[in-house]
Length: 452
Ligand code: TRP
Image (cartoon, rainbow, N blue to C red; front, side, top):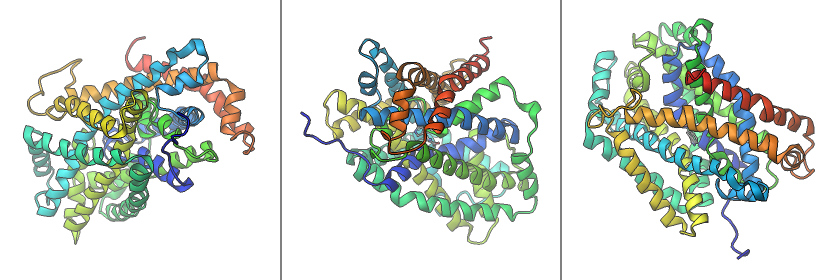
């Protein structure tokens, strides 16, 4: 039984791009701008930055470390690293299983909109700088139940076929080819947006904070975004960590991924907000923001159709790496714990997502009135995962590492068993994981949910 060697990332560069491929996604290009817009701009950005540094990064490091130490899926990891009497910690893995399905249910739908917009861009259907027209086009797409399901299933079909290929041949191979392209295209887009008349108002919105707009709910949203962005709190980084090379410097890799991911978000913000103000869109438009402003930015420029098409193509590509990492959590759990084989585990996961994704995809049509806490299924899945399951998972991971796993073992793992000299850094990370992160997550969670 010990002979079968586990799949994993093959090179240090592969680890970096695959992990970055997980972090970078619709979270940067769709969620970050729409949440920043809806929550008042720079103040939100500031809170998001603090949450990323004090909570996000340490949790990311801790989570990745557990996976690499155990070399197992999100559930089995806790059976290996927890003391014999404490296998209950594997609840973290099962919560991650659920969170992955919930996130995929709405994420695949947004990715579906992006795919649809690639074709609309080519056909010239979204060539407008009028907010009213742009809004109507988007509303038309989401209100069509068949189109919504079609695009979602297409996305699931494509990502499902890649995930079946495995970690090195599927996830890593795709990330390697696609990540560099994404950066180049974003830079072009920013240059265009910044050259618009009125760009300054957009930059001011993004970079001069108004602290009065920071409410407890905004804090929770920013924290949820930090978790969502770094793919943490549900075993995703843990699962990827289990494929890391033994000599990979985990704190350094995590920091690089965090910085690169942040740059992509800021670039997306710089690409979008100047255009929002220049063309008179509403920054608080919510999930539809990107689908209205981006066409406007390009329509107003020469060669717009081409750039618009490339932009949506690249957003689609960015969504792939992130979805693969989300899929990998249940796929690894199912295939390793139930000996299903990778193909079958992938197939079951895709079917589960398709079923759960249906009410999310129909949230602007057939299931629009199916509301819980005032949220339609799409909003509910997003809220439950980002603002509840991820922070809860984050607290549990912190408590486990900070109070059960302990400093000596953490130092051994993060120091690659003595190969790295980073003990002061490990101490700092450990302090954040043991005290600062769990307390701040708990405070923000309770406050944001209005429990005290
Ligand atoms: N980070 C990705 C994005 O921003 C989404 C994502 C991938 C994710 N894996 C995750 C979010 C795990 C939460 C948990 O698009």
